[in-house]
Amino acid sequence: MKNKFEIPELSVEELSHALYEANLKLIDANKRLKDEEKQRLDFYANISHDLRAPVTAISNSIEYLLSASDLSKNETQETLVIIQKRTEYLQKLINDIFLLSSLESSDQKVHKEPVDLGFFLEDYYYMNCNDIISDNVEFDLDIPENMSVITQMDPHLMQRVLDNLINNSLKYRREQLHIVLSTRLEGDTIIIQLSDNGKGIAKKHIPYIFDRSYTADRSRTPNSDASSGFGLSIVQKIIERHNGTISCESELNKGCTFTIQIPV
Ligand SMILES: Nc1ncnc2c1ncn2[C@@H]1O[C@H](COP(=O)(O)OP(=O)(O)OP(=O)(O)O)[C@@H](O)[C@H]1O
Ligand SMILES: [Mg+2]
Image (cartoon, rainbow, N blue to C red; front, top):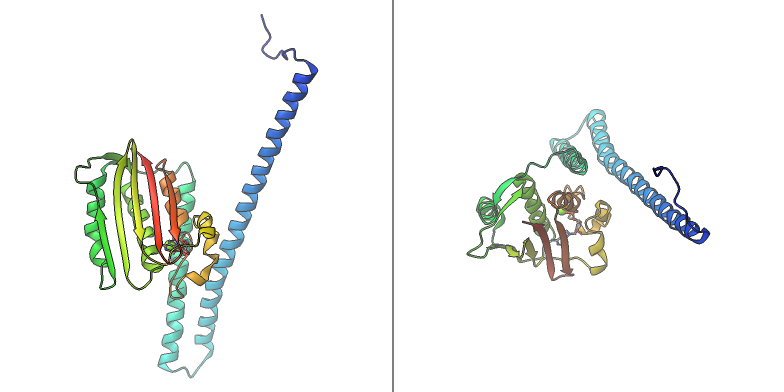
C-alpha cells in the first residue's frame, strides 16, 4: 500500500520549480499580512486622532465654563453649543465604528428576508420624499412597470445604504439638486442606482472614496457637518454582505452615479 506521507519522486528541476512556486506564495502571503497589519495600524491611528480632537474640545469648553465667573448668557450658550456639536460627532463616530466592526465580523448575522424590491424602494421613496424634496431639491423614483423581483435582503441595512447615499447627495450638492433613485434587472443581477447632479468627485479620487481615510479631504465636507467619514465604507460592507458590489462614476461639478449590483 502506498504510504500517504511518501514524497513523490520528482526530478531536481521539478523539485526546485515547486520550491520556487511555494516561495513566491509565501512572499505573497507575507506581503498581504503586512499590508493588512499596516491598514489596521493606520485605522487605529486615524480613529485615535479623530476621537482625541472632539474630546479635547469638550474638555476645554467645560474647563472654560467652570473657570470663568462672569460669562454672559450668550457666551455660556455658545460654549454649550460647541459641547453639544462635539458630543453629537462623537456619538456618530462611535455608532459608525460599532456598525462597521460588526459588519466586518463574519459571526454577525445579516438578517435577510424575502423582499419585493419594487415595493421596498417605493415604500422607501414615499416614506422619505417629504423630508428630501424642497424648493431646491427634486427627488425621483424610476422603477420599470412590470418589475417583480423577490430577493433576500436585510431591509434595515439596505435602508441605511440608501440613507447614506442620499445624505451624501444632499451634502455635496450645488444650487439645484436632482436625485434619481432607479432600479432594473439585468439577467440575474439587480441593479440599483442613485444619481445626483451635485459637486461630483474628481476621477483621481474615485478609487479611494470607499476607504474611510478619504474624508481626510475635509475641505469638501461642510464645516457644520458631523461627518465620521465611515459612510461609504459602511455602504460597501453592507453590499458585500449581500454578495454584491458598489461602484461610482462621476465627473467634477456634473454629479455622481452610484451603482449597486446584487445577485437575485
Ligand atoms: N454624492 C456625492 N457627491 C460628491 N461627493 C461625494 C458624494 N458621495 C460621496 N462623496 C465624496 O466621498 C467622500 C466619502 O463619502 P463618505 O460618505 O464615506 O464620507 P462623509 O460623507 O465625508 O462622512 P459620513 O458619511 O461618514 O458622515 C466624501 O467626503 C465626499 O468627498
Ligand atoms: Mg457620507
